[in-house]
Structure formats: C-alpha cells, structure tokens
Amino acid sequence: MNHYPEVWGRPRDDIYGPYNPSYLQTTGPKTHTQSPAVTGTSVIAVKFNGGVAIAADNLASYGSLARFTDVKRLRVFGDSAVVGFSGDVSDMQYIDRLLESIDIRENYSTHGNMLNAKNLHTYLSKVLYKRRSEFNPLWNHILVAGFDEDKKPFLSSADLLGTTYSAPHLATGFGAHLAIPILRRLFPEEKPLEEISKGEAEAALRECLKVLWYRDARSLDKYSIAVITAEGVEVKEDQVIEAQSWAFAESIRGYGAQVN
Image 1: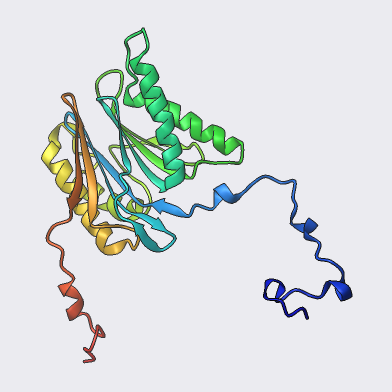
Image 2: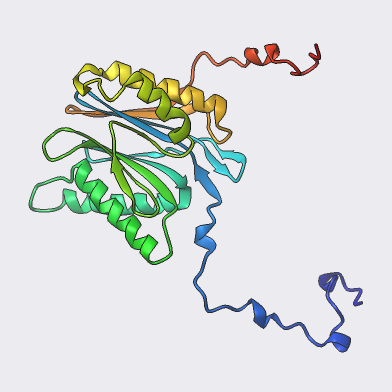
C-alpha cells in the first residue's frame, strides 16, 4: 500500500495497474437537478368574498436542517396576482426570474393589457409541463392566487409534472394533509363564497400555519401572508405565530423526568 496520504485507500499502481476512472463517464442525462437540496414547505391559500388570501412560512430547509429562516416564498406579480412556491428553492429562483422578465415585458408592451392570475397560471403550468417532458423537471409545487378575466377570485395549483387543478382552498406540501381538513371544516363546500369574509380567511390561514408549526418538522413560526382584493395586493411579511406554547408536553406521560 502506498503510504502517501493523498492516495490512502487506493491499491498500488505497480501491482494492480493505474486507476481507471472511465467507468464514471456516462452518456445519460444529468440527474443532479432531480435531487433538491434546499426546499421550502407548505403554501396555503383560500378564496373569500372579493379576493384570495395566501400564506407561506419563511423557512428553507437544507435536508432536515432548518438552515435559512428568511426566505420569502410569495411572489407578487403586477397588482392582482401572487405566486406561492414550495419545493426546491433554486428552481423557485429560476421561475422568479421568468416572472420578472414577463413582468418587464408586459409593462413595456404597447397593447396595455396586464396578465391576470389565470393567464399566469396557464403560462407556469406549460413551463412546468415542458420541463417535465424533457425529464428535467422544476421541482416545485406552486399556487397562483388572484383574479381571472371576469374579475372573479382565482386560485389554482400546478406541480412539477404540470398537473393543474383548482379549488376554493388549496395547500401544498404537508399542508395538503394537515391544513386542508381544517379549511374544509371551516369552509365546507355547501358554504357560499359570499359568506366567507376577508377576516375569516386570514384567521383560518393563521390557524393552519400554527398547526403546521406544531406538526411539520420543516416549518417555521415566521411567515408571510398576502391578501389579493380588487384594491390590490396587501403583503404582510415577517409575521410571527402568536400564543405558542409547548406546555402541553409536560402532561404527556413519559415526557422528561416524568415516569408515573
């Protein structure tokens, strides 16, 4: 065995022949983009009478490490749409650059029309489907909230496969399992949209974020919330979940020093 540190663990060339790295070469597709390293978790949104409310926490996790605690995952587009991102943060930044270029092009266009939320969702779903068809998907699940061409509240989803669907309330990530049941209980299908107020929608999102903070290991107690109405987009950043308490853990049998 060669005793130089830089070759520790490698067989001697004079006995086994020189190391041949050719087996590492491949003609297949690059797959490193299909292993997201830094990811964001749930985005939650709900329609109400006269608009849409959408919220997401500010955490970007490096694997299971809560690494980046100030990542805004809500992107305001124009004055009538908001895009919420979950999934890979680098792919989110790529889509954000696409949105910025579209925003600039629309503002300098001569026709004078601005893309509404429905147009924006159609565009993003086509981008996601194209990348999926190239076997190089953008590893994101997005929600688009705003208004359609008829000035009605619009909320729809698109994932990394280009699959799209709409509903009165939507959530991505772990929120699809924890937040959606809460929203369905608060706003059942038989309840008309006209009976849901802006305050009720915001309170419901804050309650869902609180549940996710307690239950989802990839969530944070700091979040952003945006409300889209006919008057424009109101964004509140760096909000903090209130009334936090882990005191209930002391009553759990087997917790800490408690043995009886």
